[in-house]
Image (cartoon, rainbow, N blue to C red):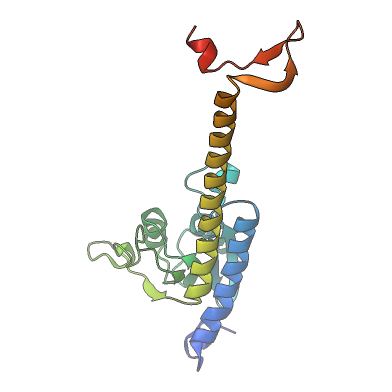
Length: 206
């Protein structure tokens, strides 16, 4: 199937849904390793030539967003930095960094799932993909499998909040137990057999 065939299909949304599903597969890979679950694929002439998921924590690289990594793969596959006949599918609206990269590489079209009303750069907050003074504008299609994409993000951040809350509560309980026992660590005797004190408020105040 060629690029011309893709644009003349009776139901192009089915095709967009198919490739967004591939992006969602990448997003789940990010989720499985504790990364913000965003996935992306780059499609040219009906074939995926780049696919990636967020790897900011894995690579210790703030620029390692799914879109950036997928674009790099696609450019290697094409043998050129220009992606003028390519479409990028991504599960969340691109941020300003990724939107800038998409404009610079002349990506023809961007399809995203979940809207980002706090930092989106494809219309959520600002539209850098179609900014009037830039030398390239991308076609934009939004909301493809949007609820699935947004649901995964909500689930991830909900788990993160729960984990942080449980950690805070656990620390509070330990601190209260320590205060109630006068800074004594139960079950750990000192050299003379007496209870061993923690380095806490009791010691610091002396």
